[in-house]
Length: 345
Image (tube, rainbow, N blue to C red; front, side, top):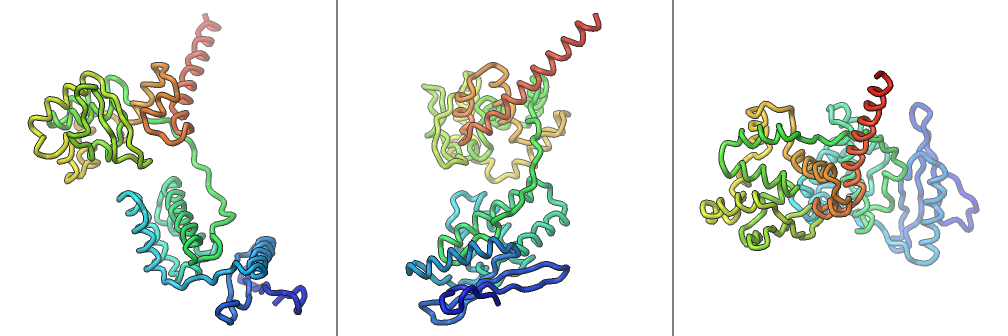
């Protein structure tokens, strides 16, 4: 154990030697309310241990220190998931935290260490999860740890200093006009055709369309009110004439369902969509690619980026800018090809 001045120090740093020459640091102090020794693992970085000691001593000096609450991992996971808005996010968070618990077996949130996160990440790689999926899982973990700190279950986030792997930016999958025609022609019913067409011409997400109800369809003004949004904010989405006509024709037959596509909620939409893509004979694409096609088409038409951002309901302009970057790359490629033809001629 390491002490600067035995008569003044309130927090001590314990250094432990691990296998393969690694080092682990722990803080030890006497809890002023419980009057017992407490310990906290702070990783293998000596400078971080010093910073954590200074922070903890400052809290003890001014009386702002609060002992960590004891709660087991499954109870924390259940409570954390209950506080998450949106069924999809809640399900993903539960899946991630439950898997982390099985792989790393932390007794309590305060027991989670940096090494456990490393072990979980290695588990995801071994399982064959792609980089975007691995990063997504770690973002759910980081968010849970931040909430645990605010609720008094952890003192620090064990992911501080985590080195994120950089994801390569992929060119958005954009359907050509010919592919759109093939996809719409392959639809097994008018309802599916309308589902696809409205997605292509409004850019709405799958969940937004599935949650659309007839009372939020304004035929007079050719617009819909989208409520089940990713940003949890309602937005008004205009429709073109063809989408308006399609929905009006569907209304008579699907009014009893509550909305044009509400009945699809009981179907495996991704699987059905894949089957339609196969029937159409086009390259692999997902339903979300219809939304990407919508954004790309607007960018190609020269629509202002801010307008596209609002139509797509993007919270960040960075997301929208990807589609303009894609178009800009195409323009630069065309320019180079023209230069080549001119030089050869």
